[in-house]
Image (cartoon, rainbow, N blue to C red; front, side):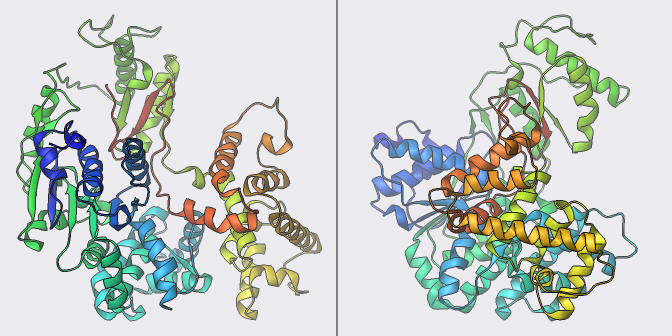
Amino acid sequence: MSDLLSSLSPSQRAAAQTVNGPLLIIAGAGTGKTRTLVHRLAYLVAEARIPAEKLLAITFTTRAADEMRERIAALCSQGIDLSALFVGTIHSLCHRILKHECRSAGFVSDFEIISPADQAAVIRNLAPRFFPEQQSLSLKKYELMLSREKNDRARLAAENHELTSESCSPFLRAYQEVLERQGLLDFDDLIIKTLVFLKKFSLHAQELRTRFSHLSVDEYQDLNTAQYLLLRELAGAHPNLCAVGDADQAIYAFRGAQVKNFLNFQQDFPDATIVKLEENFRSTRTIIAASQQVIEKNKERIEKKLIAVKPAGARIELCELLDERQEARFIASEIGRLVGGARFESLGHDQRDEELPELSFKDIAVLYRLHAQARLIKEALEQAGIPLQVARDRSLYEEPDAEVIIAMLELLHDQGNDLAAAALLENAIKGLGPKTVASLKDYAGKSGTTVIESIRQEFSLPEITADRRARLHSFLGLLDELTEKARTLPLDQLIREIAAKLSIGAASADNEESSVSQTDENLLDLITAAMPFSAVPAAEGIPHFLSKIALLREGEQICPQQEAVTLLTVHGAKGLEFPA
């Protein structure tokens, strides 16, 4: 047996040693799928002698990609060189293909990924025109509506070698026209354009298949139609494709995920090797038995039976309470019991259960279905003196102050970006508002110029007063000043400069003794994120930084080191572990 695989279980080892042909790893919850996948990649390089640069490892989230890279780095320290291995999300892979292969083939011109703020602005502007009777719908609903329509038309786009506007709804058609004018793509465009490229340019597709001989895909059950078609095209007719997943953990149907893609793997590849990982190393026997009785009622699944490695553990308790306020107080009481008592009212347990292991606040999570349910729980924990952190439902880059700085970076990179210009003028420049910005956009559209070019011209718009005109020209002066500084300053210093000029955070005034607000923390996090792109002048680092943050999918953000109870959604908890 290879020393590399000696720590794996028999089923994990069988999966890791399968080198060629289609491989389906049915990995139940807590069965060590990431460990198996990483060791298989190492085995392919160290034992099967496949160059690391010929391997592709696709993860569902950026967080999962980071975890996989950390484990790969640990194996690299043991003398296995996996540094040339590509690990990333399917969106980051498509971004790389579009930026290099597609541009060299003349299939796409230069583009940027639309930011969440800019996408929201486009939808907010278009939705009332097409859905005047549905003003109550959230922006997220419209975004999902657009995404699902694109996803539904992915197969047709692949067959026709383009997403034809004739096949789109008027809403999607108008949305795509705005993006195309600005040279922007959204996440669905990344997938569909790459799929169309592979179908249209067969020689380039074959070259990519030769370059990447072995493809591994995590969370295969969460693929939507467009992603599935893309990976099938990338894998080719005789693929070395390793699909890892579990139909029992398919929770993203609302985003267009099709669990049938996972269930039909054996139909797609009749000669596939099937390996089931059924030993659960995470949960107690009690939890496994209960969850098994629930999930086995599901008709759309591949039969497997999880085997708990841990002993029975604590019983599962079902508590029926009068209302959400009593529920919140009960949760606070339970947390006190788990950590050994606290200074608050008890609803049924006066002291910590001696059978429970010693727990701290960071070991505990409270899960709920919707973010709206967090409010009362948060209030109850705060009243009880329990430290807590509420997992973000948006990333750092979607925080209002960070969005302003990012919009300025987008405008410094491309002064023709009207979405970024409008966002800055409306949200960061005092004395201007939606009407002024709308007039500028309307003027720019009619005159065939950009918003910034319109301001530079001596235009005549009666609704823009002399005072507002002065503010606009002051903004131009700031833009020109920052453009000049971007030629010499590194990106981290330029971000500080932007924050100071726009009066964002105490850090902008270099006041060391100022109290640290959430804005200050966001600014510091943004500067930290920019550090890897700060070895060159900001003008060179900005496009790479913008591409990096655009590819970070929205998701829950938590700090596992913080000594606090974590409040988060069930979806946000996927892939995380908490003792209680």
